[in-house]
Image 1 (cartoon, helix red, strand yellow):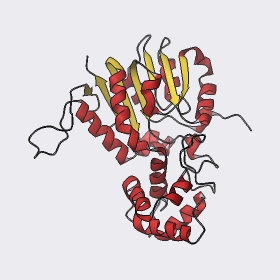
Image 2: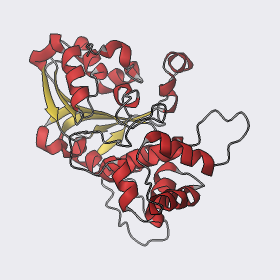
Image 3: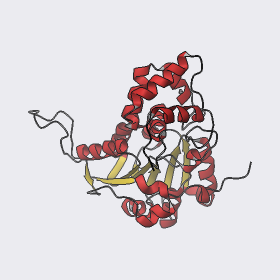
Image 4: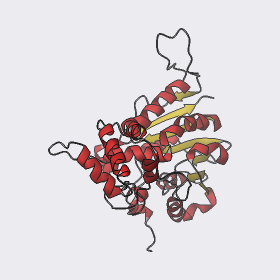
Length: 312
């Protein structure tokens, strides 16, 4: 198999904005909690010659690509296979932490991993292909109709979730469960009315929902944000790049709560959400990609960046 070329496979989103908000300084320790193919980390290492980075990723292919891309900085990078949710295992203290929550091009463009309906492949979708977690096909075989519908509605915000779930279960009961990306995409396409000139494929939301469920992406995010602030040194920076509204909502609400702003309903007589002034928010509104960046990298269109600084 030909060697991967990370420079051509994946463009790092909001790169200049990320570097500016992370504010790399001499001899600091950074954590790239979702290393991917190392684009953001490479830019950081090039910006500050004495910076050290702990790079975490659960995808073996991504780690191999990152090690190749960062081979010239190997003495300043510690590579760790793991989930960002377990950041406390891999870093006791840090001066800055970055998490890019998007699916990398390496995963999305894979013809075998099951992340995209552009290819006919087994319906897997696990970020860590070697893990014992249920893949997407197994999830659809084990859950009942209501559970499947709830996943597609909650994580994909798909209005026709119940119709899709019903057809998935009908097919399963007929002895022919959905097991490939093409089977699922065609089933969803028959279930969701498509408007004329609609550019987004009808299966997009369903695939997103299943990927989130398989990898427990939203389930672990709030805990990761809290743990990250805990291990940051005073004045440490936390930068999060999200790609859909559910992630961004969790980041926004978590930052507000950690900046001391109560998130409880106004009618409650006393705060019960545990708001505590731990950080100052560095981004009044989320930063988004410029039109120039979007034209060069269309996947940056949905990216939103939020940042916070730990109070001294």
